[in-house]
Amino acid sequence: MAAKVDVILGAQWGDEGKGKVVDVVAPDYAVIARFQGGPNAGHTLIFDGKKHVLHTIPSGVFRKGVWNLVGNGVVIDPVIFLREVHGLEAAGVDVRSHLLISRRAHLILPTHRALDAASEADKGKGKIGSTLKGIGPTYMDKTGRNGLRVGDIERPDFRAHYDALTAKHERLFSIYDSPVEWRSKEQEWLDAVEQLRGFTLVDSEQWLHDQLAAGKSVMAEGAQGTLLDIDFGTYPFVTSSNTVSAGACTGLGIGPARIGKVIGIFKAYCTRVGSGPFPTELHDAMGEKIRAAGNEFGATTGRPRRCGWLDLPALRYAVMINGVTELAMMKADVLSGMGTVQVCTAYRVQGKETMHFPYELGDDLEPVYTPMNGWGALDPEKPLPPEAEAYIAFIEQAVGVPVRIVSVGPDRKATMVRKAEVPAG
Ligand code: GDP
Ligand code: IMO
Ligand code: MG
Image 1 (tube, rainbow, N blue to C red):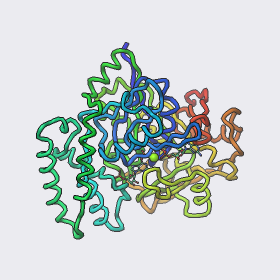
Image 2 (cartoon, protein in one colour):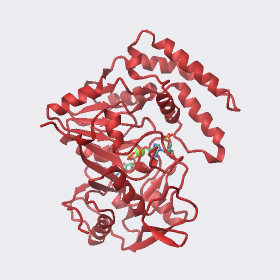
Image 3 (tube, protein in one colour):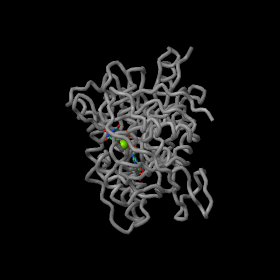
């Protein structure tokens, strides 16, 4: 029987710890495949006392014998991609022999990055807080049917297509007040494209189906998080791709019936980087304390992440949209020793309490909190303290799916697997 595709995705606003979980489970899979996003992602892996941050390359790259596929739904900046490859090679990792890139993945051009910056500057106070990696403009060109794809670099007329698209972008620059400079980045980009030709470029949807037919299991690795999804996130403060489980189907070319487990990753609290609504955000000393304890600074941009309490209406929404079958709770150790921990169990809107995640998280929306007992130090070798177990049971009850993984530190080894069953009721 053909194997399944399990999915790991973010259930909050990104940076939940997806990279860590993918790395932990990767030995159980033949293939790890990224299905959307691009170098806006920063997935951190820590083992053997070393830290690695991945942007485009899937988080199975450190596991011997595991194939890593950059799927058609991903957008690739050849410069960032090569830098990542060289960094891994310098660390002694054999990247190339087990890395495949979809011909259908779209290319981020230097002009896309320039357009991203110009658009953000133009938005002023209303800016998205983009990572400025050119993600939005590249997906715009994809859906606008102007984009360049990885497969195009194998064509003899690639340069002509590149020149035509950059000329078009030049015309777009004229709508912005400030002059846009991008030419200084061009040669480096063209050189990187030249080197990209040396990687294994594949018709990834076919390759993936051949693997599945041979009974090889696949893990689809998401980037960003559900609340940054282009359709279901806090629009317009979102990214430009479908980060939800459906994105694994379009971003890899697999049918919905092929999907097995959908593992939603969430932090024991919430963070967000960039602009946009965040109902449980803490603007006080507790927010600072969580930021410091959790080292909440962006893996891609270094920006401080906004911190707040766990938001159960939002998590329930993420479970619903993705069809999450199980959850992984990350960074439980960060709340150790914090005393009472608050959990948002409902929103109050115009005097009425609701669990419904609304069309807009307006200023009139107020989180309703339930206080929970905090816990002390956590040790992956020992059972969780009863307060932490009670916190998890409370979450399971509210969202209706079990928490099977609990992460208690950034290291690969600081990971616990629970024998959790689907909560009753
Ligand atoms: P991703 O984008 O979802 O892969 O997550 P990031 O790598 O951007 O951010 C997660 C951060 O939390 C990284 O710095 C990880 O090393 C760290 N991390 C992951 N799990 C844990 C955990 O259980 N405890 C602590 N303290 N840090 C963790
Ligand atoms: P990982 O995979 C957290 C946020 C940006 C900004 C918005 C749009 O590491 O979880 P974009 O560059 O996509 O146009 O930015 O989305 N954002 C992320 N936040 N983690 C990420 O990825 C993110 N990728 C984008 O901060 O608010
Ligand atoms: Mg990240």
